[in-house]
Image (cartoon, rainbow, N blue to C red; front, side, top):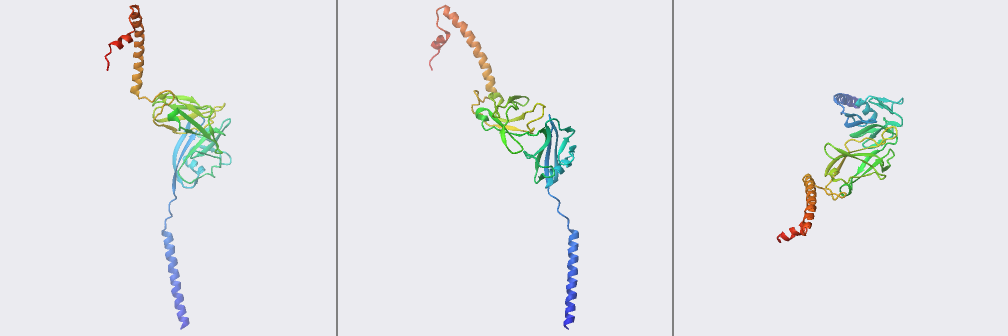
Amino acid sequence: MNKKFTRVISAILSVMMIFACAVTASAEEGTTPAPAAKIEVEIRVEGLSKTLAEKEIEVDKLSTLKAAIDAAALDVVYAEDGLTIKSVKGEAEVTTSKWQYAVNGVIRTDKLNACVLENDAEVILYNATEDAVIPSFDATDVATGGVVVFNGTDKAGNVAPIKGATVTWQTSLLSSSTYTTDSKGRILISDTAELYEGEHDVSIMKTNAYDVPEIVRMDDMEVNVPKLENVGSGENKTLFEEIYDFFYSILKGVVEVWGFYINAILGLFGLPPIESLLGETTPAA
């Protein structure tokens, strides 16, 4: 009796195990793996004298930078190790230049396959001097003193003023002016016609003796000028006020010239200056 009961229980357990395995196998066969998370990567290629390419691509999250560059099809030629760049879009390294890269405004020195992109990213591949810096600006005092300060950050994260660089400052929709930064990285914009309230496109450039960039070319740098507060010696005037002042100064000059001659004639007849005559005939308020 006990043996029979044992055999029945064993048979029942065996059937249950077989059924469980069948259900598990069926579940595994019908399961679709979740798609890999995607991120967007903007890649810009800055050559020695111009922007060579701009692309936006989508790659799997945690892709390496090398995988993203390859996906962008930028005609990259790698060194023998396959992890450093020798040329991009047909432009190779020259004397004192080197292809490098920055991710989200930070210069990276690790190999391309060691740089992992965890989130959406902005990448710049650039052909420049090995010690080229990423530029930035400080416009804290632009509305009160017309001063903009430019600093550069190197691959070690050190920040220092950019001196002797050429800054192009947008003055209107179709024109611009150039300035040179001083030893503290500053430019001074004293002409209020060039410093109106609003956004100004700005770029900065500096090259070495071989015309190789010492500053990484940045895209869409904008200085937002707030309401001006006595910049330089001028005032923040509207276009109408500037036109009015222009014609007023001309008219004032004409009146002063004619006033000189009229006073000279009055003097010949022993009469007081015209200002006195006008003052005597002007009724009191």
